[in-house]
Length: 103
Figure 1 (cartoon, rainbow, N blue to C red):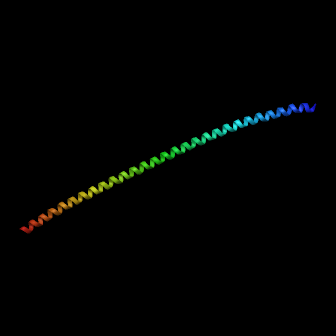
Figure 2 (cartoon, rainbow, N blue to C red):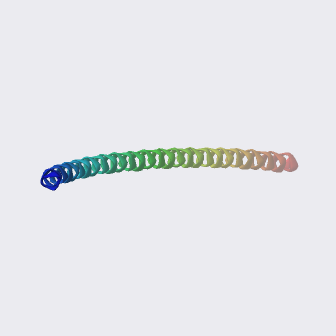
Figure 3 (cartoon, rainbow, N blue to C red):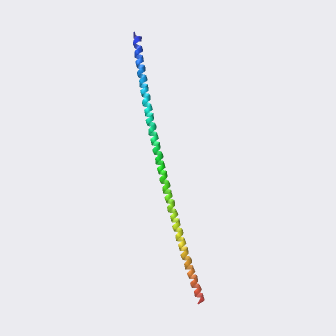
């Protein structure tokens, strides 16, 4: 008689454990999926942030290069203007010296 009662009790326990095991597996799979989705979203954000920072750095470098180029052009123009003025002045002085020599 005890054996007849133990068998249904053992089966009930076995089914209960199996049901818990399936439930636990489902919960574990759901948790793993949630962690995977969070990790993927975090990586996407990190890539976007890195890309934005890289773009900003390149933009700043390009702006600095443009400003440097403009400064060089302005400096070259100023040197050219000064050289032209000096050449004119030297020419005028040579003319004056020539006129003084003719007198």
